[in-house]
Length: 302
Image (cartoon, rainbow, N blue to C red):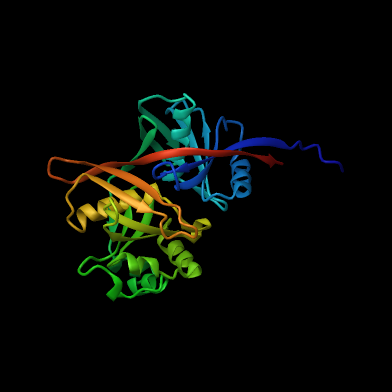
């Protein structure tokens, strides 16, 4: 039997989210006007594009835009750098203007703020789970540390790691300095198994300080086919909450560095603004930065 299925050519814009001074950042695929694409189509495109995430932008009668996100192997509810990449590109081509808009995802709506060529995405108030609570799911802190080649002596004194969720879940691991961060040895299979048990996107490791930043970081998410990522807006939000609540750094703005330890390095900068109640409790946050359009490619679907 001769197949009558017709192949389609899909245009994908590669846009780096969270660039630093116009360089580095984390590349994402961006597909505009994706209304006619099915979830299977999107997964096939994301796999062929091969970026850590691809954003598919469609029309919405409930928000400014409909966004669907796919890694090479599965759907993900939210993605910070792909959101920033897509909205920065929409601003550059004149399809959004200064001020507030929104995106609708499988996990509900999120506010988006456009400031010039920067874009910022709303995240939720943080929820925390302590290491003692992980045991019921078959995970110990020792397991987590072993999966990245660290011991408790490598952690910041008196600051326990936490599982933090502001829309997606990450384990946030505070290490004593950048040298320790540089020598982390991730066991991808072990991280994936732990991430599956705890329903994580992945791990976000950090050391405080750095050139003009509040923290420098690394992110590992093999459960989503991301061995290491250059910028993760959905993890920077949880980290800012951790710095504020667990470490007592009571500021409302944080600058987060990521990507410096990639091979090759891809320096990225993520800005996080906390929204706090009168008593100082975090009720939400905005994470964002600059995006830069890099190139265009065509994917054959079907």
